[in-house]
Length: 343
Image 1 (cartoon, rainbow, N blue to C red):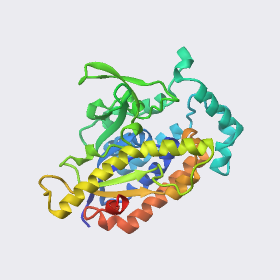
Image 2: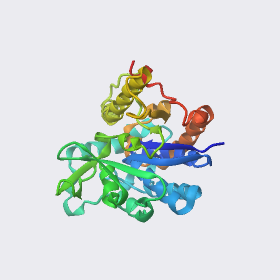
Image 3: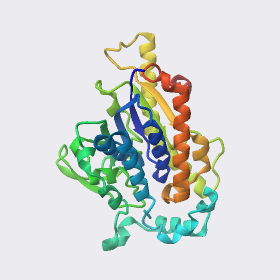
Image 4: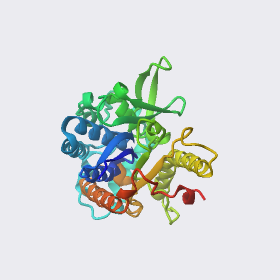
């Protein structure tokens, strides 16, 4: 069977990125599926860096090992305001038990009344140790998949895409910098000649698709979506409302790019554009919205071992279903009906 070359677009979503871990773990078992490009934001950036580093150094098994090591490190992280004293809830049977627990409610209220800058000299970014464990040489290497990491400029609100040797520890931390939890990450920008502050890339590209439009990359983009696009029920509690606001804002940039792709696809179909002018991008999506709607903002913010393991299992199962149904469609046609989505 001919090799299926694909690009991956990896969303951010805090600890829910463990779902993507499971998806990648399963995809790596397909010897005839080649990952040519990766665009990642926040947790997607961490997953993308681990995936590329592993592929470059140790092939498919190396990538699996790097992803396993990443999530073992993430499992030991507690964000600012969410201390180790919450670990007693690790085996909580349902996500709501964590979301409505007094401990989480207190920590959430504390985070809303303070700023990451309130900690002064005691501030530390708990993700720094996780990211510093990466060997950046293979992450930045010219071989292996092209890797793009997205962050948001605080000053302008515009996206910055890091690639090649621009990908540093700070670039990855910037991509995952939620401003209510972490101080902005400052990075020198040679294009502006100034030091820019960055927040989470999800505000401007979750993830950005346009870096994957390069003619050297395949037409297929497989989006691993961990923020539900739709929710049937209207959120009514403060937690539900805030969670849905975050989902909508973090999906908005992706939906705008998908709308643009749908428009180009329509023009190509009508013959008003040619393939020489615009590529016919083929879109696929791996997602489990039913699972994600059952989880909560608490399971995003607290890397609870119980849910991390369950999310990996769910990611593997969802990827397996996608491959069973659509592997033959890769490099042939889109499996997401964008015309119906935006009709």
